[in-house]
Length: 238
Image (cartoon, rainbow, N blue to C red):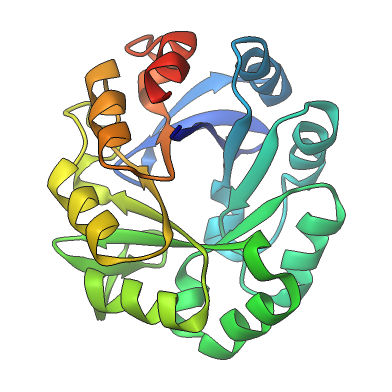
C-alpha cells in the first residue's frame, strides 16, 4: 500500500497553494485549515502533509497553533515542513503533537544540524528534496545547490535519513502529471522511503506511482480543484 498524504499549505492562518513555489501567485482555498484536515479524515485519509509557507520564508513557526490543532484534534499522522532550521524548532513541533518534521534547505546547508536531528529524533526526521533540472533547489526554490539529485539522495541515505520527500518543481501545481521516470529511478537506486510530490494530477498518476513501489505520494492542488477524488485516490493507492 502506498501512503497518500493530502497536503495543506499554510500562510497567514489560511490554507493556500502557490504555483511553482511563487509567493506572488497564491490562491487561498480556505480560511479554516482544520476543517480541511477533518474532511481528509472523513474521506479516509490516515496521513497529512503540512507546509508552513510563512515559516519557509523566515524560519519561524507562525502557524504553530493551527498545526497543533491538526496534529491533536484529528487522528491523522502529521508531517510538517517549511523553514525548520534549528533543533529548537524541530522540538517545538514534535512536542506539540506533530509526528514527523521535514528538513529542507537546512539539510543541504547544515550537515551538523541534520546529524543532530537524526541522532535525537531518528525516523521522525524526513528530508525534502526539491529538484530543479536534476539538481537540488534550496531557499524556497530560489537557488540551486551544487548537488545533483542522486548525489544528494545517496548522501542522505548514508547519513541515516529514513524518509525523503522528492518534489519535481517543474511539475508542481502545473496539473500536467508527475515525473514517473524520476521516481522510478529513485525507488530503484535507493533503499529509503520515498514520497513523490509535485504534479500528482489524476488517479492514473496515483496508480502509476503505486506500481513503482513508492512509500508515499502527496496530493495538493488536484484535490483542491476537484481533479482527484480523495476517497477514490485512497482506494487506488492500495
